[in-house]
Structures are given as structure tokens and as C-alpha cells.
Image (cartoon, rainbow, N blue to C red):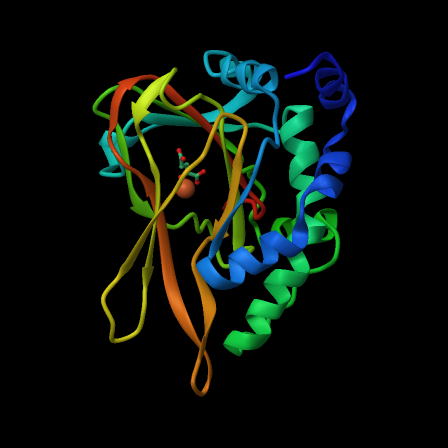
Length: 246
Ligand SMILES: O=C(O)CCC(=O)C(=O)O
Ligand SMILES: [Fe+2]
């Protein structure tokens, strides 16, 4: 990174970064694939700073050892409120860009729910429905670890899109450990997709289902995401889920 790019990144607020994303490209990719990459959302230094929070238990409300629950192998921790500034800021500033896409999806899938324009308003709905615990999380994988295909649903209220940011550099910090999505189509075989990510890249993807254009309107496909086995090194990611948990 050049010195100027470094200065720019260090002063770019989460709102600036959300503004710099090519939202037309993201919307097109989401419509055709159910996932889209937002390149270099974080600088390598920010990635290292966030990953370095992992041992600091004061920042987290719970610790999950995946093998104990049959979720795979590896571990993660849910942040407590207040979230780290960058994570909280991105959660607030990405949401208003994604809400119109979520609303269009629901309209096409014949689902009545509509999401408010601002994240604060959506969180208020979650909290009123008894979903009050923060869901952003930090994951850590070592060789042999993997994350089984799953959906991050934590109650009746679920925002249909979520974001994961890769904090480690593939090929240098770890090998293996690809981000995987599957799309289960009605009466058809399941479609796999591997999303190539570099350190600092974010992927936005469907939490649960999404509409796909068919010959007679749209039909619903069911998505799951996970991570293939880490072959070497250590891999960290941060997950930004927009609904809170029961
Ligand atoms: O580690 C990953 O890339 C996936 C993390 C994940 O499951 C999530 O952010 O919800
Ligand atoms: Fe997940």
C-alpha cells in the first residue's frame, strides 16, 4: 500500500467505506450468485488489530468451541456491546445499503416483512422481540479446523444478508480454509460456490434464502455457508450479522 493510500484508509470512517463500495456491482452479484465480494474493506493493519482482540475476554459475551456442538472444529467468540468502533460502525453503515436489497428480495419471495431504513430502527425491533444479545463474532481456526454448513438464525427476526471479513492473508497466514456457500434449489441438486477472498476483503451473502428468477416469477433457494478445512497456519474472520440474538 502507498503512503497516501495508508493515510486515506486510516481516516476513512466506516460510513466513507460504505460509500466507496460499488453497490451496483454488489447488487448484481447478489442477484446472480447470492454473494458478492467487497474488496479491501479493512486494511491489513486493521485486520491484525481486530484479530488481536481474540484473547481479550473482556470484549466478548461468550466463547463457543465448535466441536462441542457438532458445528465443526474451531472456535469463536461473540462480541459484547459496545462493539469495537470499526465493527459497530460497519454494521451501522452497511445496513442502510443492504436494506433496500433485502426488501426487494422479500417482495419477490412473497414475504410481508420489510426492513426499516436505519440499523438503529431494526435493532429496536429485535430488542422489542427479545433478541437483545449482540451477534458480531470473531472466529479462529487452526490446522484441521472447519466450519460446517449453517445458517446464522438467532430468533424470529432475521435480516436476510450478512457480512464476513477475512482478517488473515491466504497463502501467507494460512492455506485451505475457503469460504463456501451452497444453494439448495427446489427439486434440483445443490449448487456449491467457493468465494475467493484476500485479507481485508468482505463477502456479503444470503443468511437463509433468496429469490431466483424462474420462467414464472421468482422461486426461493436455501443457502448455507461454511469453511473448508484449514490445511496450515491460522485463519481469523469477523462475522457481521445484523439481527441480534435471543
Ligand atoms: O470463517 C468464516 O469465513 C465464516 C464465518 C461465519 O460463519 C460467519 O461469519 O457467520
Ligand atoms: Fe456463519
